[in-house]
Length: 221
Figure 1 (cartoon, rainbow, N blue to C red):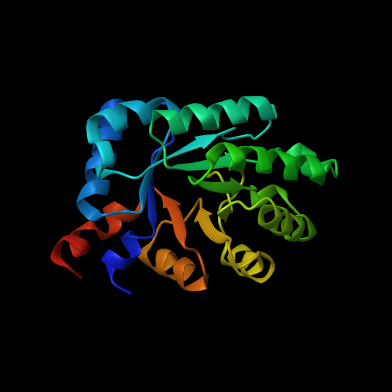
Figure 2: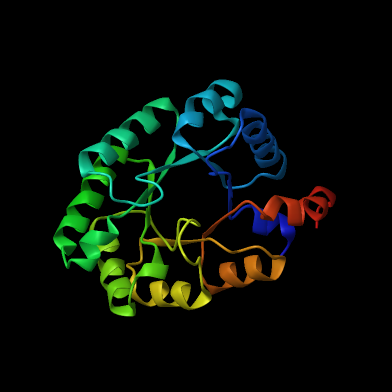
C-alpha cells in the first residue's frame, strides 16, 4: 500500500479547543496538497474554510462532540447549520448514557433524525467504544445499520482510549453491507494506518498521517 493510497483514506483532523485559524489553514493546505479524504474540523471553522477553499476541500465536522449528551434537537440543528455552512460530512456522537440505560430506541431515533437532516451528505456515527461492552458494540452495529447511517466510527479521540483493530474486526462482522467503518484515536504510525485499512477501515481520523507520509506522497511513493 503506497503512502498516497493511505492518505486517500485519511480524515485530516484538528479538533482541539485552542485550534487557531492559522493551524486550521495549515491543515487545509496539507489536505489539498496530499489529497486526503477530508479535513475534520470544529463546526465554527466550516464556513471560513468554505469561503477560503470552496470546492477544493471535502469538509467534515462534528456534532454533539465530544461527549454526546446534547439533546437531540441541538444535534439536529448543529447538523443542519453545518451543512448550510458547507460541510459534506457529519461525525455525530451518540448519547452513551442512553446505551448504558438500555434506551436503544432513543439512540436509533436520534441517528435517524440526524441522517434525515444530512440527506445525501455523509453521516458517521461515533459510538465511543472505550466505554462500551462487546454486546453494546454489537447492538450499536445493528442500530447504525438500521438507521441508514453511512459509517460507524470507533472513537472521538477524547475518551479514555481510541480505536483498536479488534473493534474494527467486530464492526465488520456485524454492520450491514452499506455501512463503512471509520477508526479514530491513537492511530499514529504508518504501520497502524496500514493495519487499520487492511482490517476494514475505509476512513481513519488522525492528525498524524500527513506528517508521517507527506514526504513519500510528494515523491509519488
